[in-house]
Each structure stands twice: as structure tokens, then as C-alpha cells.
Length: 184
View 1 (cartoon, rainbow, N blue to C red):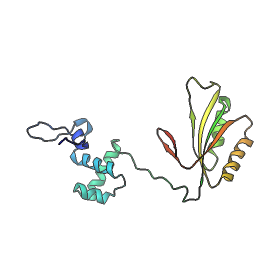
View 2 (cartoon, rainbow, N blue to C red):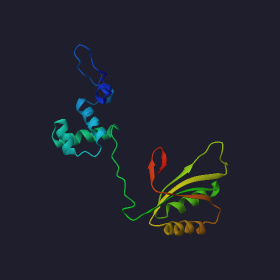
View 3 (cartoon, helix red, strand yellow):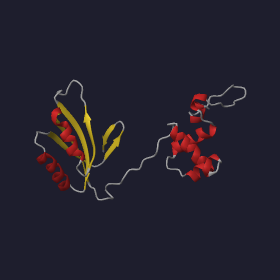
View 4 (cartoon, rainbow, N blue to C red):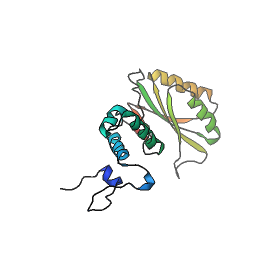
């Protein structure tokens, strides 16, 4: 039977095959309990401190201290929560690709960021295909209705005194991540 990949065995190599004792690399400055915490949290990021402490057989206080140390070391990241926009009444999700002259990009950015409903705005660089005088944006918004979006976007465009080239996509769900935008 083959050994399955295991976080503990990948971080804590056996010291000697005879004794099968595990040792920690000193540069990580974590022990077997910390590794167990990492394994448990990796499989259930929403576990409560109480449940985690029971699984690692420590009291809640020391468990909390260990988790905080793992956060400070950068081995864990804070969990995030996602809003259910539809439950809040925001049923219209939109992505806008806009292009403005670079000389107008700062004014455009300020205008976009001041609109309620605009969730993300990012300048995109497309090497080799983009005009160096043009600044391209990906803008994501969540509005209660299409009319609300049209009113907000029209308000932006009428206040600006320069041209904006844009395309609008309606989306059912927009997910934001460090790696880009995923449309579903």
C-alpha cells in the first residue's frame, strides 16, 4: 500500500528510518502540534477554537495563542467571508471594460471609486497590444437593478469631460481573487 501525501510527513521528515522520530526544520519554528493545527484548518477553515482545541488535545487558551502565532508567521491567513448580494437585494452584477486616455485616468479612477455599487476597479496592462496613450480598466459592480446601474454609469459619463470607450457585460456572479476575475 502506497503512503498517501500528508502535510505532517512533508513538513516533518523522519530523523532516521530506524527510530521513525519526526523533527521539525528549525527555520519554520513550529512543532508537531502547529502542523496538526495547520492540517485541521486546511480541511476546515471555519472550525471554532473550541473544536480545534479538542482535536489537538489542548485547552482553548493555548490553542488560540498558537493560531495567532501561525498567523503572525504568515503560515495562516485570516479567513474571509463573502456576502450574499442576492439575499441583500443586489440582483444586477456587471463588469465594465473601459478605456480612457492616460492623461484622464486619474479623474476617471476617482469618479468610478465614488460610485456606490462599484466593488472593484483595476487598471489592466496588455503588453504589445495596448496604445501607450490609453489606460484600460476592469470595473465590477453590484447593483439592485439594471436601472440603478444605468443611472450610476450615466452619471459618471455625464460628469466627465473626456471620452470613455467601454463595454458592459451582465454577469450572474462575479468572484474576485488575487489571480483575477472569474465570471460564472
